[in-house]
Length: 152
Ligand code: NI
Image 1 (cartoon, rainbow, N blue to C red):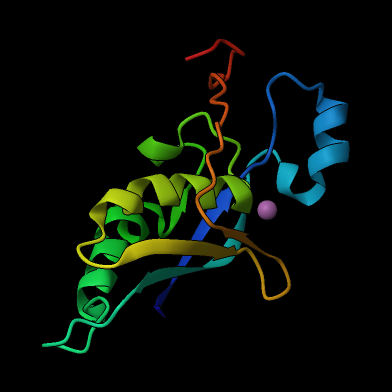
Image 2: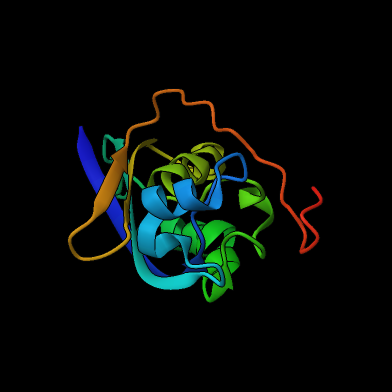
């Protein structure tokens, strides 16, 4: 088995908060990432596909194709966006690196043309990153509140 990885970068802002927590709880738990107007990170995503090289091409997966899928399905939709507000597939999800990895997995899993999706890594900074190998995880989607505090 060979593991083939494509890396991509995006920059985005987010705010980590749970509408079911008090302001104080949100501040204590999410700290800097709870900044009311959001704040930014330079993210790195690594997508690894596993498989056996095709005897005729020597490829597990054509990395040009994997790059195009990753850009089209994910990077183009999150780059320079506010993850809480601008990205349909993240609507209502607390945009931690953990949750991004789970959502990205769901998007890419069925889009990989050859080989099998093995892992997704999401780096939120040079020092902090998560790895996901596709074990089922149920994410909670919270209602989004408008400026009057009404769920939308
Ligand atoms: Ni943050």
